[in-house]
Image 1 (cartoon, rainbow, N blue to C red):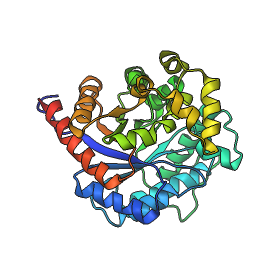
Image 2 (cartoon, rainbow, N blue to C red):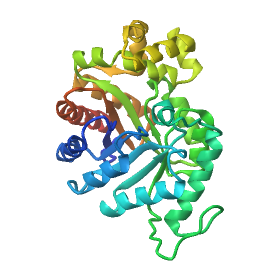
Image 3 (cartoon, rainbow, N blue to C red):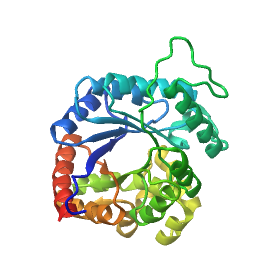
Length: 321
């Protein structure tokens, strides 16, 4: 990658803090020189589109991305216009990420995830039609419709069929919440039809206290991951489900016991910003994504954002070498 421009860098946040705090984090990211901010959609939690609309008002350069919503919580046309509104408010900095949805977002609403690939195919078709102002099955543009044909559409999922679909129909894939050992296979699927954009994100901690605080929560990376990942770590899905149920009830003992250091290293990069930046650089040199970033697991997010900015300097220095 010698001679190329620096990679885009980003942070992936969950909407688990006050809206005003999230907006402050967005401003902090831009001031730290970070390029992209992704926010998850947790269903009956803080609305990601509202958060990004507020972030648009305090930033001028930061790309604002939903990573990711799903086809069940809203009609795809409403998802499209929400993302298009962020795109308009930010003067072209919006990104819409779509995926199959998970228990965190859907279970509180009693929504069963049925035919997720078919539903995402339908959603992408409708979203594209809305963005372009074109009719399609199930959508007729109203007279007052506005359009955003340049709104990027990414797919965020872990499986082969979804990533091959992304290669066929999306502008990019958002690779996050995935064990680094699975990166190459997943990116291969995403590049199997067309050379779409790759946004590659790893879970990271810069502080030992944050590692221990996050340890039980990371069982979900195994529970939601493929069987091959569980097999490599010697974990059974039934044990993970039992631990997840206990964790939801406020008991983290089972989950903490399952997440040994060896298993933790499958799904989390931990160390100083320099050490973590070098790990990310290794993945970037091998995979050659268009953007890279971190899902930061931290109590002091402001400090973690500064650590990420330091790691990104190391990343770009090593990738350009």
